[in-house]
Image (cartoon, rainbow, N blue to C red; front, side):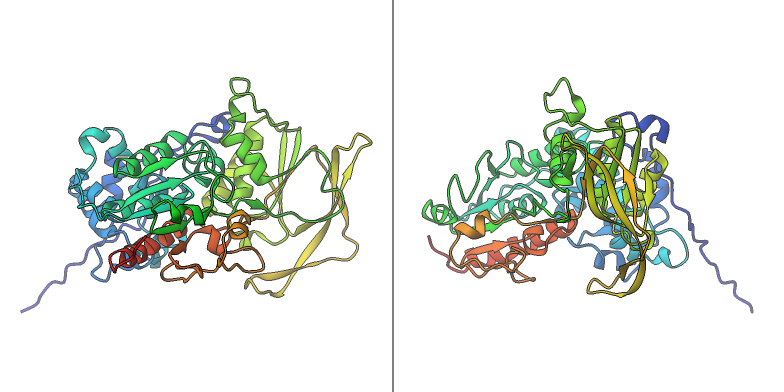
Length: 475
């Protein structure tokens, strides 16, 4: 007797994400990626193998039950998929758009060994957008927790702070977020352009966090308006610091003070938060010349370059001292930038800026680089090539080299230890700092990193704070 072994043919090609064409999107700030339709989402979800070992979950910094919510999409149970997502992630519409899934959950996907991994981020966005389309009917109804009688202050309404706040509110604690800006969201609103992350999506996710009972105090600069010590005196038993890393880094080369040279932080804040892209309806213009140079190779550099094009620059160059292979930016963002006309100059490093008699930048002297042995970052060290100096003409320069934490809170908080770069020292597993009853997480403790890693830190800190509060913490 012979037996026939049946095998399931793997679908190794993911469903493409619809997006605006480069010729159209380069002229507007509307979202580039258009999202899956219901039919497309179901087709992509059907590729999931529902692996028993669930490797994708191991790659998720917040531990989402990825096979679980994808299975519900397969079966058409979208409300259940929302519940599964929201159990571990309070900001799924944001994560589905800006998190680097390709180096986290999708990298772990079993299908990645032979073809394209499941488009986990796109499916997360689909479910989150489905809920937001009718939040009254589709938002999971939560049972109000028993009040703990404890209060927690969250400083910073970015991804780490919002996540910690949501988790703690679900556990019954009173939570108040103190935010320095006039709007909540942190880097999500001042750093990421509308065409990648619409501001109404961010505010919808903030409203969800508030619906859990979280209070929001805007225009409150902790370290200036009030101090950490004063928060403890005002009935808070625990404090979480999630103020991010908003202090820009510079090249420190001659000519850097010429007009027309921006930090990416200032440029993107003007464009996004202060809505320069809607000038003259919003009176915060950004003067972008015909020739723009962006220095750096991360997502912030891509965002800056793509904003400059949309603001009317005739030619935009991204100058990066290593090769394409070493660029930290998401591959998708690099591809989008290239499609839109951004010009990349790899293995190039600035030496000085050149200005006119009026003090405005007119050029940037650079040197070509070649790659040597790996440095402390693990990437090949760029080494200048003798005799390769050249000048790039430019009207506007945007320096996108990363950021460090603002020193305001450490400078005004006794017992809070920091490193030489201003990074707050905190336990990696719990977020507990050297100051009793003070936790920290996100870019404040790591330097510039990803939204999802900040959210993971917020979740871990919330769990530690809850354990502390339920084990006899007193005022």
